[in-house]
Length: 275
Image (cartoon, rainbow, N blue to C red):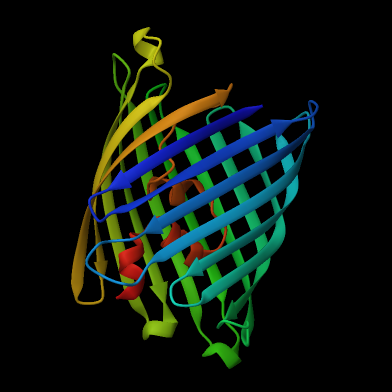
């Protein structure tokens, strides 16, 4: 199995963890598991927020590198009451040398209110790709769209993301990412985010300390204001897992979170949800 666990905290008093796991049962059959948890409980407000997400991905991989699978994703955003997202769908992709690519289609059911009285369904689709330009440099990109029904106001959610990761010498990794979330529910408002980060992999330096420590700084433009953040995180590999930043908008470019709005929430400070 290959797994990574990240714990993080930032200056807005948000903290949480991310678990990304790939359980292998044979040369062809595997099960992907993602668990996300974020909480925001500042001293200066009575409002507490939390975000939870669970995703399962049974996958079949062919000998030539192509793979197919299905995903089930449950998420909830708790503010004063809970907003629940239940998603399911199919995906297909390939891994071949320096290239990786994947497409998915699915649907999401969203429930609003303390008794789930406000419900709506939307269809969604997306594509992700990554390319290893060299042994040190990787470029990733993602585009996805959710089509909202007329009874929920109609329109679309769109997510575009681009990231670059560069492995330096002596255990250091640098990365940068850009993300644009556009929602027609907000009058076609666009929310842009930028981030740069540096990671230090202890294992590559021959120490007994496990994992990687990362520090990331970024900015998100929301309506007529901007939100800056600095996040300190520790990523620990479990089994043969790869250490990579999970609490980052660079994750959007990988397409790990399927559903544009959940990508936006997963990599935002929870305080921005109130704006």
